[in-house]
Image 1 (tube, helix red, strand yellow):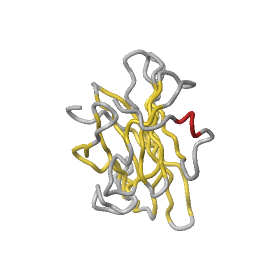
Image 2 (cartoon, one colour):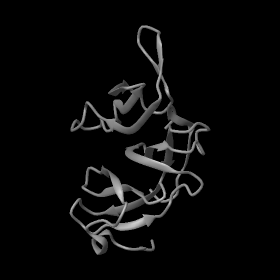
Image 3 (cartoon, helix red, strand yellow):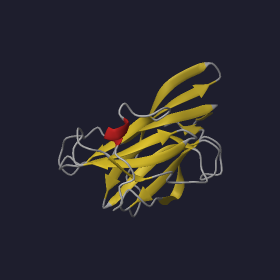
Image 4 (spheres, helix red, strand yellow):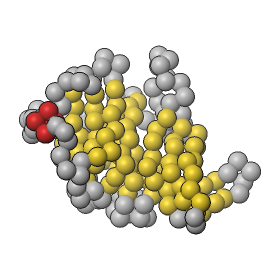
Length: 177
């Protein structure tokens, strides 16, 4: 694997590099997604949270503008959820995009690619159409229990008119993944 640069050489992290999303493996290794200038996602890795980070993938989806990434890992695949700012992946501006990767370097669209839309379906059967839904975070209510690494909930920031809130939605593992 070619090391493009190490995060250590750039600390504090460079201009307009934000929204770090780490995935911590059981052995302590880290895969880190970062939003970089121009709304692109780069991926770095390290052997430990305080180790030397190596950039392993630049601009993982060159045609898309993505931000607010979050990572999960299941059955040998990394799953990245991010806001699809211009709708290149999902076909709708600002819907949530779901990408998968075996190695953290080469990423492809999940089937389905839309992780969330601007329609919230409530348990009573009603729906709310939101103006914005963003900053996806994968939350695991079972964190720390062996064999329960897949997130149980998707948390997003929601705006409807002047109202805003954090929306917590139960999720299941992707079928066949």
